[in-house]
Image 1 (cartoon, rainbow, N blue to C red):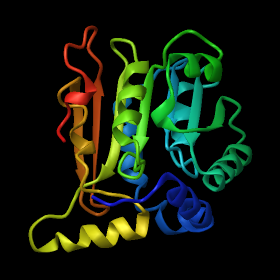
Image 2: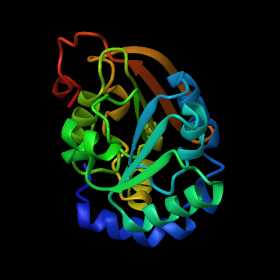
Image 3: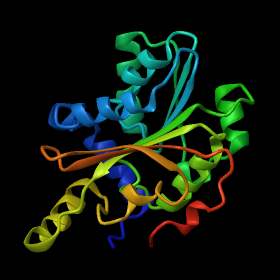
Length: 225
């Protein structure tokens, strides 16, 4: 596993923020659209987008929940959030709020304060971020815990290369300050009912969307090591 610290990752993405959209927005457009579509959001729903980055998910989510809905984008990098704010301002998305923080530390109290409601989020999304966050298990566990039964969780992340192409993982990790070998795409399997799973070979990514059961008997910590 890679050993990038939270501080290093923040600095990396603060620096990289200006060039992220021109370099990668087109590559991940299809899987982002697929993830949001599979969430089956309704007008008035609320969504937490952890690791929101430059805000590529925000217009899609804002359109899905409508003017009466709410989207909160959470990220640790001020540079990425600044770019996300530009997107929010340019597209005039009044139902979107941005928050700086660590997804590995959020809880119901944080959500209530950020969303100004005691109602849990309708959905949580994590696109190309659980493979980057140092506290990735805590981020998943805590964000999944925010959902009530019937809430949906969407993960979009890289599919690790295998066999002779395994060394490519190291190059991707170095370029994105991540560890794409983490089993983030399997996190939902033991704790939820997966309703959508789709691969996108062009971007080497997979989308997994699941519904949280009314009663969860297994915990997120039981996901594969």
